[in-house]
Amino acid sequence: MPGGSLSGSYTSLENVYRGTTVPNNMAAGSKNMLKNVKKALSLGGGVAKMKLEPLLDKSSSDMAEVLTQKETKPIPKIMPTSVAEETALLGTVTSDSMDDIELKNIQLQFPSSRRLSGDGACAEIRVRTDRGDIMVAVHGDRNKPAIVTYHDLGLNYVSSFQAFFSFVDMRALLENFCVYHVNAPGQEEGAPSLPDDYVYPTMDELANQINYVLGHFGIKTFIGFGVGAGANILARYAVAHPQKVDALALINCTSTQAGWIEWGYQKMNSRYLRSRGMTQGVLDYLMWHHFGRGTDARNHDLVQVYRLYFSRNVNPTNLSLLIDSYVRRSDLNIARDGNTLKVPVLNITGSDSPHVDDTVTFNGRLDPTNSTWMKISDCGMVLEEQPGKVSEAFRLFLQGEGYAVLPLQKITPHPTIPQIMTN
Image (cartoon, rainbow, N blue to C red; front, side):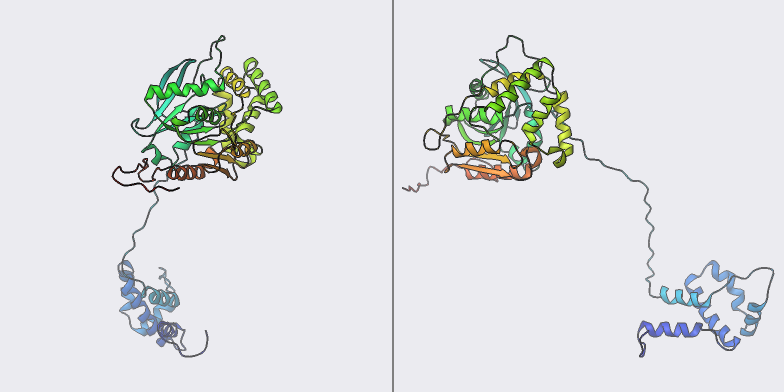
């Protein structure tokens, strides 16, 4: 220890150590030892006091004699130094008793596995059109503003939108909107194969089927939310019927015809789907179409879920008909300086998506005053890999179009408040 005088607790410990040091004569040592033993017994009490009481009644000389004798019954060994140390340390501890805590049971909770199947939250309704019946899933109060969604190739409303609209930031939208999920003919979950003589609708005819959906549910205007082929269908409908569309949120939207490379791949996929079913080549193309390249290293678990879904849950015959219709699509015939989309557009893509160039071309044909292009980093399938960023962008987009965040209702001017006219 450093030199100098001791104070406080160090002084008391010094006295303790000094009293337990082995003295030159036995009598002095016995007196000090008896004093320390009494201190220990005042704390311990009970059985220890009963066993050592006979020793305490003896004189110091008798005590020394007892300690030096060898008896048949062993006398408990008392270590003066350890007793003194325990006495000094126990004096600083509060007398409150501490209850022991026993760990009796451990319950492990594992996250629920990702499943691409319906959860029963949507009401599935068949809507009759001029090209056959289509299935529309409705989620929410029909008296509230409408959001119409349309899925991409190989998907349906469950596998494309269920996880996104179940995201915590998107649940508030369902309290203020009614979502109508439109499924292309034969693409819903568990759909039977379409008849051999069935002529699948073209992309323009698929867009025209939305009119039957609006008429069936009494929808006057809606907000469109589409992905891939579904985004192209909603954009076609907005070009033909701009008065019925309030806004569009489109992901990986293509506005041009299919190129020769895409046409060749898709024709080959369509032929294999009809003749052999879901082959490995078609499966790889679908994974590339949705996620881009390097998906196994980026998000292995999510990729495995969709690989199993495409190989087990997709009707290959019906998918081949939709692919044929998509690859034969016509140009949207829009231009920034001419006939373009009159409605506000949120144009979204992922940095790893193979459709980034298509969205750039589409953005170049839109009016810059009412359109926004957004590329989200570190993802290809944005709704699955970055739902938080997409939901935030979508909510801000709606707010910019006059929908307040709380509550999410369309803001209309009060008839008694004069409007300020600007040139």
